[in-house]
Image (cartoon, helix red, strand yellow):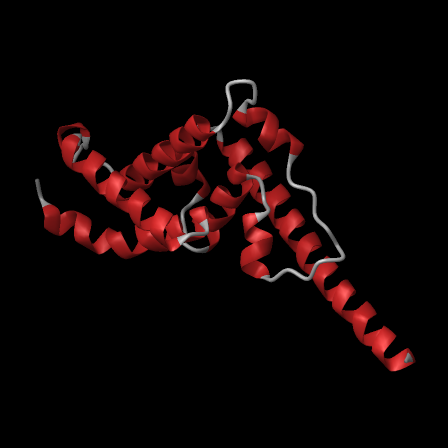
Length: 166
């Protein structure tokens, strides 16, 4: 295998895994699993294709499989994604916490577009969904993130207003 081809992609994989999992140890494990899977499946990579996209596809699939494995059988991943995560406006949250509260599919698309600079078409291939789905997930993720951050600012403004009134 041509390790020198993969090495330049490791920082991006680590960065994305850290943002995706929210935990440096789980992120390292996810990157390691991704690299192991890439080594084992190296013969499936086509030299005329995008290696970066292939590696991120492996990571995406591993992450989704880990999520599914962690859920009880009675709970479906799609049900959790549809239900979303309720935002508590009374709790100040920073950007990382706001990102962590996004549904996984929205967080994943948002991070891959904004942090890793994936095109919509490439991201559609990586995640295995149509481009329109990528665009709608991105739009919903941005909206939820904006709402969460605005809720944080409103809460902080209200607290400072109360201090002034005392």
